[in-house]
Image 1 (cartoon, rainbow, N blue to C red):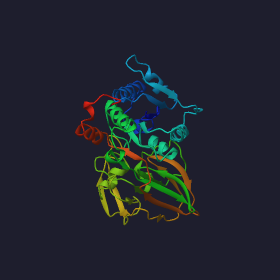
Image 2: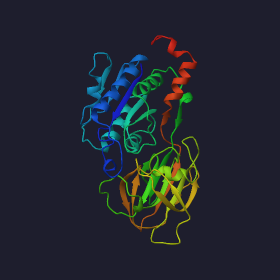
Image 3: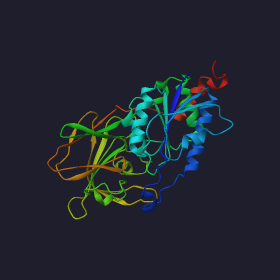
Image 4: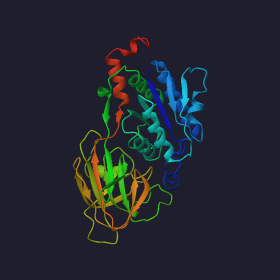
Length: 336
């Protein structure tokens, strides 16, 4: 019998971008409802075992409190500090306990933390954050169906998933951290509110994906050259210094945050080859990972970026349902 993990971030969609932009707020009750629909989808295809991450709002526990559900829910035995580290720890423990598929609720930051914890568990990522490229706006019931079919072996993972790309960040030759979508270098030197919302503070951005229909820094890159999840490599671009009259080479119109669509001046850009490290010009800066400031780098340190396809398999919910329907799997009884 398959085992499905659920990691839900109660803080997703509640950062400063909901104040400085028109970012949506997904309240806890809606996250509970989404998780419940995931559970109902799981149950309908025969999945009965769920391993959940404990969180400050008890989202998974509240979702399971429904007379229509008869699932075996177990919470991870771990201390909860209600920080990003909880997600990292939870994903690692789920990998150790043999979770067959992981369902996440959050934004790019939540999913980055999950991948830091484990790069091997197949994922269905549901968007409940502010800027979301890695997770999808998918209905919870459908997410539950797809993840349950993978966990229960109804469909072959290779037929319905694509291994994701990761941007590796090296400092002085050592791997410091990773990002799923974007790494941005900021002139600011302090973490402060963490979330990146002011484009004028940035001078260089590195992307694993640049998709025209996305929101955030990746949308800027998509105006230069589209790079999808299935395309190899990534993209790098520099943002022109407004005080340097000779640095601008082109201007693009891009939605960098919900309701915020400025013109961004680009100084240069290039494709990044898969597995090739780029050495960054030495300067004092702050490194932001998937939209959140993470750590600072001194001018005396060597910063390098490399994109590689070493992330977890990401399940395409629509494709999984299509494959299952084509194979007549919805015409059978769970357990057959």
